[in-house]
Image (tube, rainbow, N blue to C red; front, side, top):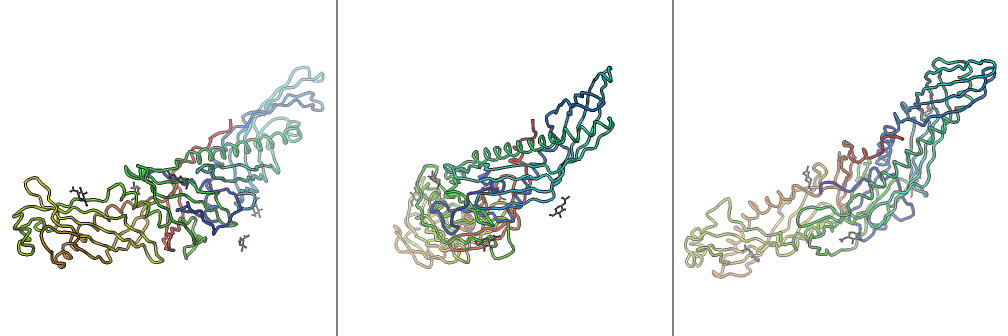
Length: 493
Ligand SMILES: *[C@@H]1O[C@H](CO)[C@@H](O)[C@H](O)[C@H]1NC(C)=O
Ligand SMILES: *[C@@H]1O[C@H](CO)[C@@H](O)[C@H](O)[C@H]1NC(C)=O
Ligand SMILES: *[C@@H]1O[C@H](CO)[C@@H](O)[C@H](O)[C@H]1NC(C)=O
Ligand SMILES: *[C@@H]1O[C@H](CO)[C@@H](O)[C@H](O)[C@H]1NC(C)=O
Ligand SMILES: *[C@@H]1O[C@H](CO)[C@@H](O)[C@H](O)[C@H]1NC(C)=O
């Protein structure tokens, strides 16, 4: 599950508004809600990237012939017009009926450029020409865009609905040159410079949105977990927008690579605040218990819940001699033979998220095998019903946790070596559970389930809450890598 699904932070500047937050699609088992704090974070990140891609970009040359009193007709060319820097005073992101609206206002930009002119007239028969540099300060730059996100066959499509850029004021500082040139630049070129800046930024917006859209479309719809399972990360329905958050749903179920379908149950009752009972966080990821049950079902169906135990901390237990007084028949039939335990999960473990923790019910069959002259002879079978609790925690970007045995009960299913003492069975089972099975399961669980976060992003200060039947992870997000955002085009050409 290395690369993950959620561009969310970047893409989630956008949406479709109508929709009731309480209404959950039956197919969405993981929901990701981005709060206004998260939207602000995403907006700032995107604006930083956008500025970085605009700065140092060069605008097209501007050339004009102008009639200058006393001087005559002058051909003036502005070249190498370069945006040197941009400062943003304020920016906002708002979710509304029309989509997601991002507005940058009161920005200033500094430009460098070269100028040159040549002119001739009957007054000045010898052509004159000159060249030099100038700096331009663009003030009160306003940029706005409205976007929308739609589900398109399980992926998200980003649609640019509207955008615009407006330069409020321009001031020019001429280095060298004649006084008349300054007036020409102000009178004849100001408008051209302004629209050139507006065009460059508008083009950048179109390119940036198209790159983000391509990025969204290229996100996989399934993520391979291992040989047995893939996770279905298709988006379900259109994202839902409220005035302070955006929510997307993902199918989130494990699917066997052999395509065994997993039963679904209906969903309801997801809380819609992003607080998890504390200070507001950027995102809330809710994971339905069905996600865990689908994993349980896939791995059970794939027969990957079976182990042969031929080592125990008390290795003597795996020889018939140790049992000679307790189960005389065993020793009589198979004197001094080694034994092993064939442990298999007999039905898919059931996982339940309560309001306090996660409960797991696991049913095992432990078959006692005797190993005699190269043959494996099953001699008895004990069934064990285990109930355990699971405390989730976040490690890195993964939800992991530890299984803790609450209680178990045993039952002798069948025996070819006579009746076994229940007490004996209990203590054997207890030893196997505590020393082998629970530690083994915990080592498997350590890896956890990766949260759906884009590469380059990491959750931080995550908090877990349980809201039957959902686990909620509320978290802030930090951005460390550029892997996706680097894809934004780097220059206006
Ligand atoms: C920046 O914005 C604030 C209001 O948000 C305004 O008072 C201030 O004048 C602005 N500064 C510039 C340089 O535009
Ligand atoms: C957002 O919507 C809720 C109700 O849906 C309302 O109480 C709240 O005032 C709204 N907030 C803003 C900033 O419009
Ligand atoms: C993955 O989830 C989507 C959305 O719920 C669903 O339409 C699709 O059939 C699922 N894919 C598989 C292989 O189950
Ligand atoms: C373990 O027991 C199961 C039946 O519960 C059986 O299908 C499997 O073949 C056994 N495995 C070995 C290696 O004996
Ligand atoms: C998170 O899980 C993935 C596999 O799902 C694993 O490769 C990665 O090492 C895990 N990260 C941590 C910090 O355990």
